[in-house]
Image (cartoon, rainbow over all chains, first blue to last red; front, side, top):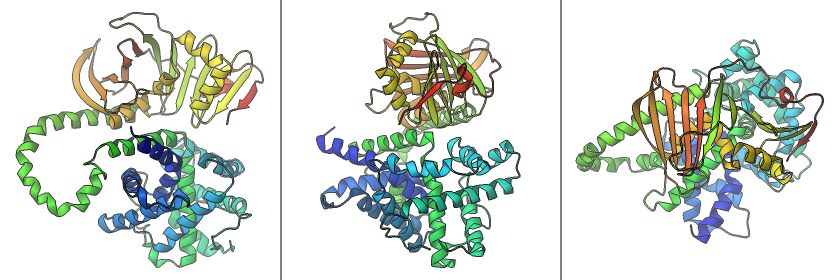
Length: 179
Length: 328
């Protein structure tokens, strides 16, 4: 592998989680994330000479991804997200990028704290859904809830995590307007 | 955020339907009204909820394996001048040119048998993957074969597996395990290391010579351990290996023998993987992970045994109150 590719692999590795989160947020169909991820990185590699090295790599990468997402929305029969949604995702990820922490994992420590701080019944549903990767029907069975009740609990849990995340991100000079 | 329960409830329901309604890859019927119909404030809140879902998904342990798989795909794509964009995207972009594909019909027909065999192998692997991911306990003996052609050797240890994330390896020196999103090592008399990342556990344990003793006693290498989760192996084969399948007799059973040859040059992955899966149940009966002719890890299914519900949590392997260290 050439030196340039090794350096690029370092960049890919550093931004892989951020790009995955962006694409997953912006795609209704999770199975499309893999393809868009690869396509974004390959385009970034081909256009690396265009990248302004004095600026952060993450927003540039998301810019490429956004164009590919819009092409994907046109080509595939996918749910189309509005520019307002994509703008918001971009702003939130930029905000996370400014959050203290050397790595993506460090930056997400506050999110772990938010999950830990959830009331027990919300913590349980988040753990089953996201850390044990149970489908809604399965976790509903585990918690002896109806599927509708399990979905409701998940919705509330995500809203609580969002509220907590906003509180922790708020001290920064945020580029994100409150909704 | 201004409290306004009415619109928030609506957005929560919509986001919930979008997120939780497509476990199978399809949107929930009637739930996917176009986002442009919603006001900008609600769209922002909707975006935030979608982001929270993606962030939480990214915190699962499997996310790390998925990340590595995506990175491998990218780096492989960069090494293939013709394959600069994923196949799906190329098909969509160059759809009009597909009419020219008729010219290639003879080539396609010539490749058909090979394709059909790979497709069959993929189907079998998918079934094996699904069965391996079920939250059922399976116990395997394992040993490392370090001489070409060596068949025997005493099992080095016992491996307990439950679904995709439950793993326990027991030896005299320590117990290593994983449950859901965290790995742990219990070191006698009462010391426990916890981490969400196996590499941290490995590095820390090796630093303290615990891991070194552990892998030496079991005749394992650190790179062997994550691959002992057989559900991960089946999935890995689907993405990173050229796989063939053949029907074989395995003791009294009829089995499918899946043989995978690694496509990439990554030495941390086995060069060859062989899985014998029972044809009826799809349960893996035997696995051979071979890095080199003198470095093969062999796992063999043992008779089912009753395993405690909490077996995959470290407290089940401690006596008293342990000193727990969280490794970052």
